[in-house]
Length: 297
Image (cartoon, rainbow, N blue to C red; front, side):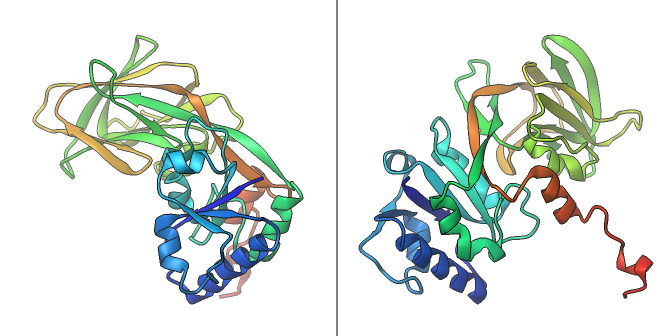
């Protein structure tokens, strides 16, 4: 197995020590490690420079050199790896140096033993669906989303109307702040914050979640993941912006956006002692007693 590392500049000095530890452990096992050039430039002053370290600067160099990519950061850092690995069999293992980290499988406490766990293949690979999003008439401009495609009004406080069609059949016109179309992976991201359901990753479905709907009878709806979704933006003075996994893609006053499950999948690594249900118990503190109820204030 060939290891590559992607990450964001660590701000915490404690995280720098953990990153140095991870490199030391990996270099003791593997003959060569590839590191994203930008990340390497930010850490090489506190990680021992080693002839085993090679750098990559683009997805072609990564694809030719690795089959497992370690992401050091939070969920946002992991999402940044999608452009590097989409269309390949490269698996992504996330180490959470951020906050909640639903996508990450390891934390700071796992850093010392992580290299050994990888070398002994103590992990599984989950195949996560990816959305393909086309936003012009020729469908020549496609973007990909692991979490969601989100449609929002560009004018804060102004309602936007969005017509939604499922497999050519009219669903409804959503009036409100916008809508989210999320994968099971994205169900614990923006969709959850907007009141959408938590969906287990292996579920074959998509979730359409309204954002602050003007009509309170609107509720999130689950649809099959092989459905073809068309979002029509009627001609209006109030433009709509679309975000894909948190990144703004466009602003437009009218037009159609087509969304469907892509042929590509995202290979997500889970350590053997981790699973989705443990993650939501731990990160959402399910089954725990709040301090104000237990008297431990």
